[in-house]
Image 1 (cartoon, rainbow, N blue to C red):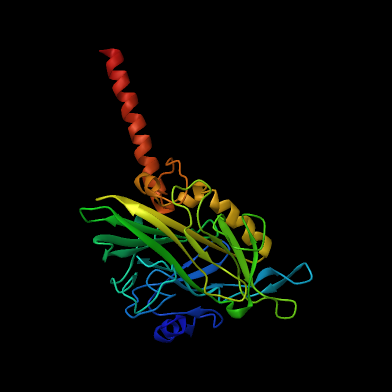
Image 2: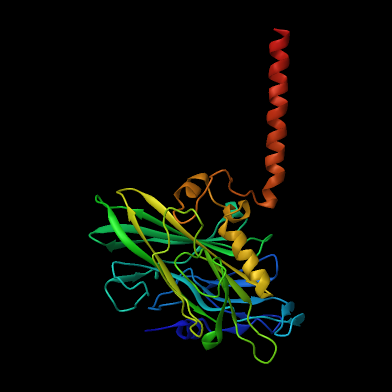
Length: 342
């Protein structure tokens, strides 16, 4: 079974112009409002269980940040190695939700051609091509979108599943990960208030355990579902000392039906900030709905949604929209004057 090391070897990691941050060929790089740069895998063409197409191969800060320390307070540090493969998705009929390469019951989203940027979202969202998967006696089309805002601090995955067959299909969708924290992975907190990951949780936060009094990786908040989503977690495996967590969902798709499973991750400089942001995202606020259409919002299955958000208008297009609005107001005024004088 190939893992993230194969991906990073194939990608030929190299320093960027600052000489401090990792980079990778075959990836899409997006930086959030706090300066955390996410590297999203483009088209992965070989078998891998944790860093497939659309997964994040890395997340590193572009500059030093005030990171929390063992004894309280903060110290400036260039946190990196946020992931070694995050948010791979696979579909299966197997009872085990851990994505398995070489097993016919598990199909990993891979080898679908190059991704593109979403111009309607100011190029802040990466669009991945659909893959049609034969499963459970039917066919399901899976595509992915990965969004990182310029004005907030998270990455969002939309996994879009459509039943293209003539019969209902019940399947498991699994999310596989390889964190950069290795055997030093520590669960800090969760939505239920303890340091354990459970099916009832909406989010979990982790970090790489202290080396001396500091930790070199971003502190992470993993958002699994909303409190009122129609599709709950069906499985979760997230424990201390294991940086290969996974979780999954069981859903039934009627013929022609589309449902979306959404996930978020936030990278922060402190454990408290990671937990706070994860809790905020689990409530699915307006910022978390940016660059989603009303139709997509209505299709999200693991968050309770009120589809009132509109697709975000990129900053460069706002002048055009304002001009159009003023033009319509002027036209309305002219028509009302004509009617008044008639």
